[in-house]
Structure formats: C-alpha cells, structure tokens
Image (cartoon, rainbow over all chains, first blue to last red; front, side):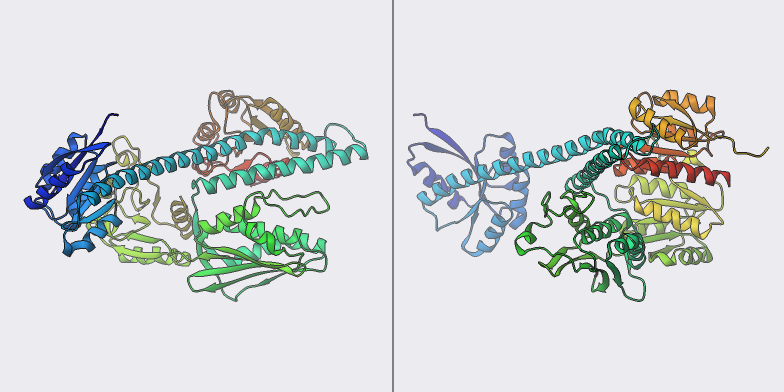
Length: 497
Length: 129
C-alpha cells in the first residue's frame, strides 16, 4: 500500500518549539501517512511558501516577529482557503487560541502540553473536519442556486400562463355577455361555473408569482409615508357591501389620530385584503368581523378578528405554510389557493413584523400582525438661501421626513458621505462648487452614487452636462418656483424606487 | 357639428386569439378598432391611423411595448394619446419601466375585460376635458 504524505507548514519563530514539533512528527510511526514538514520563522516567509501550494495543513504560532495576536491568524486565514489551520498557543494565551477557533481555526494545541500522538491526531482530525466543512459549503451553494432556479422557473411559467388564462376568461365572458349571440340559461350556468374555475386559476397564478417573489428575495418594498388609519378605513369601505350581503357585521377599532408608518402601501393593503376575505369566508351570517390597530412601542399592531368557525389546534402550526387548506368552499365554489396566508406572512416579514393567530374552534379567529416602525428617510437639502430650505421643509412636512440642511457644495458632499441620507435636493448654483461638479463627484464615489438626487433649480438644467461619461445619469429636476404637490410627488417617487 | 364621433382604438398584441377577443369586446362596447401584431406594425399604425387610444402588450416581436409606449409619449404629435399597457408580466421592474415611459394605465392580463373597458372609458373621458 502506498503511503500518503501529509505536507505540514509550520510558522513558528521559537527554535525549541520548532525542534520539538520536528521530532514529534518524524518520530510518529504512521503506517498510512508520513509527514513532510517545512518551517518558517516569520509570517511573511510562511505566507510566501503557502502561496506556492502543496500544503495540506498549517500549524501556526500567533506571536511572530512580524505579526501578533489574532491578526496573525486572520492574515493566514484570508489566504489559506481550503487548508486547515491549527493554532499553537502558549500556556498564557489560550483565550487567544480559542478566539482563533471561533473565527475559523480547526483546533489549538498548547505547546509543552503536546506529545507525538496528540499532535498527529490533531493534524488528522483538522484535515478531515476542514474537508467536511468545505463539502457542506458547496452543498449549500448548490441548494441556493437550485432554489433560485426554482423561483425563476415559477416566475417564467406563471407569466406564460397568464395569456392563455386571459383568453379563456375573455372567450367565456364574451359568450356569457351575449356578445357573440344569445345563449340559453343552461348554457349560461355551465359557462358561469367554468369561468369561476378559470378565475381561480388566475388567482393561483397571481399567488404563485407573489410567493416566488417573496421567496427569491427579489422583493423590493416601495415605502412611502402612510396613515394606516386611512388604509384600514378604505378597506372597510371596500368590504362593507360584501359583508352586508352576507349578514356579517364589519367594524373597526382604531385610535383617534393617524397611525403613521413608512411602509409599502400596496403590500400593506394586500395584507388586509387577504385577511379580510378569509374572515368573510369563514364567518356565517350573524357573525362579526373587527379590524383593530394600535401603536405599540416601535411597531403598529393590527388584528383582523372574526366570530367565525375558528381553527382547530392541530391546523394552527401549519396555517402559514404553502398549500395547506382547510376545506371551506362557499356557495359560489370559491376556493382559496392555499397560498394566501403564506403570502401574508411573507409580506409582514418583509416589513420586519411578525404574524400569529389565536383561534378556538366554534368561537372564531384572531389574526394579529405587527409592522415595524422604521425611521423615515433623511433628506439632504442643499441650497444657500435659507428661505428656500425652510419652504421645502414646510412643503414636505406632512410626510414625516427627517431633514439635514447645508448651504454649500462642500458641506453637501460631506453630509452625503457621512450622514446616511436617502435623497438629496440640490440647488445647482451653490456658492463654492457647481451643481454639475457636485453631481459628478457624488456619482463617482461608490459610497454615494446610489443616493437619488433631485435638482431644484432657478435656471434651466443643461442635460448634456449631466451625462457622465458612459453612464447616462438621468437626474430629475424641477424648476423654481416649485409647487408643493410637484415636490412631494417627485420626492416620494424617488424614494420609492 | 354635434354628435359623438366614434372613438378609434389601436390594439397591439401578438397573440391572435387574444387580439381578436379584445377587438370583439371593444367593438361590442361601441369602439372602432385597429389591430397590429408586433411593435413595428403598431408604431406604423399609430402614425398612419392616429388612434384616440392605444392598448399595447409588453412582450411583442420586433419592438417591445415599452419602446412603443416611449415613442408615442415622446412624440409631440402623439404625446396626449392615452396608452394602456395590457400584459402578463408584472414584475416590479416592468411596472417601473412602464411608469418611466409615461404610460397611463398598467393592466395585468387576467383582470377581467370589464376593467379594461372601464379604463378605456375613463382615459377617453379625461382626454376630452
């Protein structure tokens, strides 16, 4: 049987310690493997040898003439890639060695407390463990790629399905509406139930797309300043007719004043729509549905509570999973897609909130969720005239933004770099640097080039000058005098994207 | 002269079945319709026929709906013509791109055609004002 050779790189500056290790390794009478040791006394020469390749394991002392402490480990770890590292520690610096293990070393050995057997064993296991780690990393990467492919697939297929479904809907509707000739009552019935099913298909496709967007993280929340009070009232109005028809009482329990939140209006509306339509499905005539909301600490807590059929304990854990259904089909054959609650959960979690249900069979269900109050965006206003800055702040005051004001270009660039601003309102005629140059500098710096800029200028803007080399930067501008709605809408639009 | 002139709608859609159904539905609602099967044909139709409103799909051969919409909206002669995008794709990037082209309405296929008719009515009303 061929013996395998394990190539060991020792980076250790103490000659005695080096000698002992050399002795231990050459004395180790291994049947299956022999050790080839190369040793260096400095980090720099050790790293040079490492870069030549062919090393199976590194034994590393952390205090070397040209490097100390945890930085020594980090320097080696950065370039060691798939090679395991065992740290050699003195009696006094075990803590340091343990820290190294925490951040990536396979093991540590206390010099003076090591004999031939424990050294050999440590080397073997360090190599095996590192290999297992690498295999796991690769498997996870594969899984991540497959997951992305799956989401892309769902997205492509769902889009493709829409046109054929639209054709079915349209064709059946044309018949039902008498557009292509009169139909009998019986034909009408058949066509109606067919159309209901096609509508359900359409809903399923929409839900699949929503879920795949949420799962693939391709989700972008488009936040703006909202008043949750208004949103809930709007949904209340939307569902009033339906609940009246079903004989259900729909109510709201909201605080007096506005419930301000910086969130995605469409998605938050979707959450309420989803929960409300569920509540309506599962509540019988004579029942009650209440929408509740209140501020609590750093979130807004909302609830959709019904006195309907309730959910039995065994179903509750799986409630927010995909495709779990609880078999309630109402009169028109309206069946859920099984994705609604999974989508709601995804939307709530995108808003950094959580969702839960309290329910009792026969008594009703309460669906509660929180939406985190995130800080409103900070807007940098760069204009040398104070009255202008004051005016803009006033125009934008009802949107709850935070403001930072500067009166020259140098300050503007400084603030943009250091103050995590979300948008810059820029006057082009600042006293020290031209607006074009400011924009140029901001767009060239990787730290600021993604900050949207809105030019508000008294002079017409030269669009050709705004083109930066090849990246045709489109910067929106408004001409002074600006109107309040113009400014608010443009700011909101730029922040959303 | 009083009396309503019949409004003319241009439908740019490459699926022939869907195109025909839309045509049927809109004519049933009193509109005159012109159809085109790809983006290039669609643009030619805009210039030739000068429709009162354009309905365009995003995924089209020869020139996609975004480009067609841009051409219409950035042309002095046609920038006031309402454009409705009627499409199966509604990813965030599609909606944003559409908005940047100045589209007047974005409708996803599988929303019922009553909605499409309502939007057409609404946009033509606004245009009158």
